[in-house]
Structures are given as structure tokens and as C-alpha cells.
Image (cartoon, rainbow, N blue to C red; front, side, top):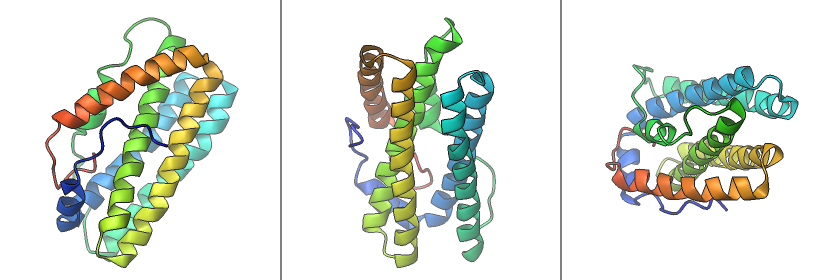
Length: 193
């Protein structure tokens, strides 16, 4: 369903479980950044009614997720700490079309959002299937389901504004780019991506 060309290294789930505090901190910031990215899309493309109406509820949901992660951290006496640089997302962003019109750039932005949601869904699934803490397994299951929905929403939204041929071509290009990025990143126990 997610179409990712390279799965996450299976060691990641084991490493993440051993360092759950850092994973939760990074997860919180991922949710905050997802809400911010959605707001940015709405501001930049405010004239696109379908986009605004589709992304507004996602922004609210991402912010609610941020609050849920903060609550989970509070239960575990984990402080938020500073945000970390997200190498995965930053590398994806370097492959956006530069210049050109805002409409042309929109396709890349929607695809990048979809890929981030797909990779997050895959990693939540790994945590859900592999974590020893039943409470966290349930916690991550809910996030997995949500991210799968967001992935589908962003790909469907791209198809509203772009032809099948435009979407399919750029999607396939980005799937290869995303796999290369994943392959080049170190497997770390303190990052969600």
C-alpha cells in the first residue's frame, strides 16, 4: 500500500525501543512540524479550496497528535527538550523543483508530505508490532492508522490538481530518491526518521 522501495532497517525498531525517551521527543517534534507544514501549504495555496478544506483537518489532527505525545511523555517524566534536525525530511526537500510557478512546486510538496506520512506509518507499524510495552503498542497502532490515512489524503490531493501522468512520473522519481535517502542515513536510536 505504501509503495516505499526500501524498508526501514529492522534493527531500527529494537534500537528505538531501547531509547524510547529520545524517540518520543523526536516524534513530538515530527507531529509539530507536520502541523506547521500543513499550515504553510494552506497559506501558500489559499486559493485552492479543495486543498484548504482537505488539509485543515489534518493540521488539527497533527496538533492533537503533538499533544498526545506530550501527554505520553509526561506520564513517563520525559521533558520535551530541543528539536533536532530531521535529516530525512531536509534531504527530501532538497529535491523539490526550484523556481517555476507555485503550482508546479505544489506537486513536489504534496508528494513529500505523502512520503513522510508513508515512512512514518511504516515505522509506527514496526513499533506497534515489536514494542514490549503494551500501552505503547496501542499508542503506536493508532498513529500508524492515522499516518496511513494522511498518506492517502496527500496522494489523492495531488491527483486533484495534477494529471495521472504528471503525478505518476514525479511519484516514481521521488520513490527512488526516498529509497536512496533511507539507504544513506545511519540507523539511529534517537530519531524517528
